[in-house]
Length: 114
Image (cartoon, rainbow, N blue to C red):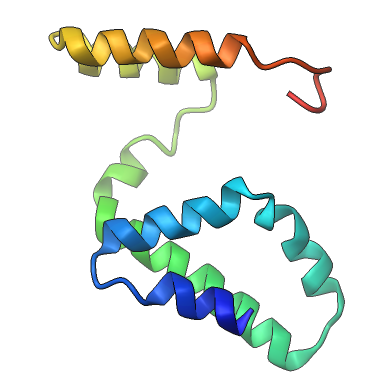
């Protein structure tokens, strides 16, 4: 965890730090955090808390109030409508959204693994 925290904190640019944090999350790192927490080892818990605080702080720094604007949305359809609204005047963004949605449809598996 010390190495993970060091890697997440090294870049000066907040966007780079968020990118690195997202790479850890994409590599199933989030799924092992509860197992690490279950060890109940004080020094490990400090590192786990530090990781969470760093990620949260970076998100606040990068997105600030934008995060709270959408925290009340609980339905995917409502969020999708807002995304479509926000890109409606950008043909390139609309094209990229279409590509992304097609990629999402290609995800196979049962409902638990999708």
